[in-house]
Image (cartoon, rainbow, N blue to C red; front, side, top):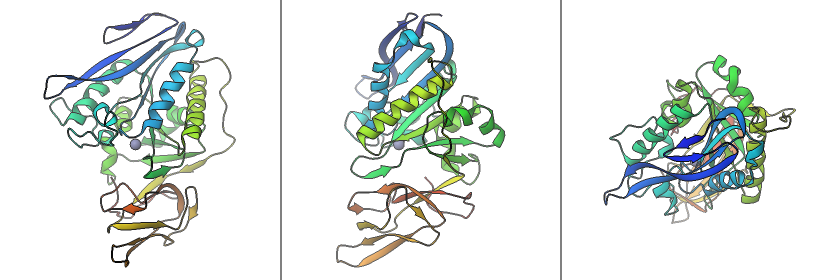
Length: 336
Ligand SMILES: [Zn+2]
């Protein structure tokens, strides 16, 4: 086993190390430095990267990564892990979803470019390092604390069934979440999906999936750490047989339901509830007490994201996500 090196930080076989990767320069000349943790196994094996907090308020994702890396017994590890618990540093440090510097969504900034928005610079530098170094990537997200709850699920994206069947399927299933959402087709009508880390790395043939951990902190930590552990077993990086779920729900699509009016938000459905097309999901009441909008389900599916804040506005992400039983082919204004 070789020494693991990133940005002049080295981890000898069977050790951990940590450091910072500079990814951009701020107006005052200070560097934007992303903290990372290296875990170098005692024996040869795959190179896995674990990343989180592309949205700066998704601190549960950050916590699961830090806890897992702290608990990991590196002497039993085969291969290496590079963990980045926070990818959007300037957003994270002010407890915001997007960076106050550019207000740009890092999770839609890939593959980025060197002279782009700050988020695009970060995406560009991170992508380059991943492509140089990683064979597999797990990119952790979670809901928006106090605003939006997400049911634990994994997302995988691909153009062709063969890409799913080859390695991605087993790798994604190994996280042991009982819902997997497929983002099929990244280049056509679902344009927003082209700009994710997953779709960028798909083109580089690096299997990548997103687990949405949560909605609660203890549950997210427990299931997140269980997921990492089992995925490492699946990849042959930790001793022990990888578990397999006897069955899970597989969804060919997901729809975002956005409000077109602002006001007091009342949901009639709960996380994980099965809904049918045209079912009433929520009402929005304006400040004069009038109902100004009723949101309805555009298709049959399961509620996997629900807005929990008492108030919602147009442009908020998002009232609901519905994981659908069929691929959703109708034109839909709510993709982002
Ligand atoms: Zn997110």
